[in-house]
Length: 163
Image (cartoon, rainbow, N blue to C red; front, side, top):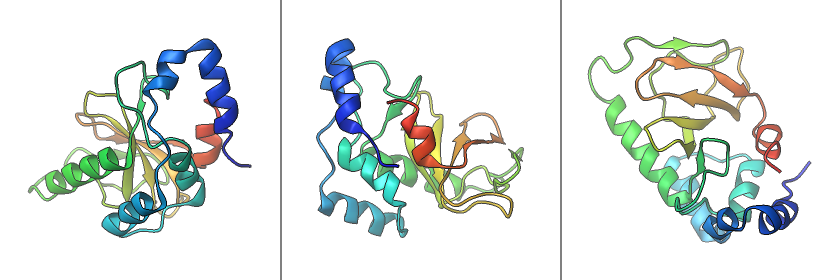
């Protein structure tokens, strides 16, 4: 299964043109390499394909992913750096309530934020799951709530719901 950006773009063009206009052009190979080298990970091909379709959205329209905006590579890095810096604080992991398959951290550098609701909450690609988890699962990371839950065990299956 591969991402069907052409079909989504056609649907948006017909029914939600402002949202289509809000999507960035595709991420370049250089941008994707920079993203992976800065994060220190190899991102799943399905996730890279999603960024090759559109490098996030500008944020001037409704969110693409229900109440979450699709982040560009630059905004992924900004959010990742912010969470990494915050997690260095003493006592940062207090009150964490992980679901099965998610590590017991408030935030982990192996969690790659890719969608935001604009209020400090993120959907992350989990590249560091707990024993019962699957690398690449989609998890929630709330800024003010320690619940960490799996939304879907496969990014592509989850992302494809929006097409």
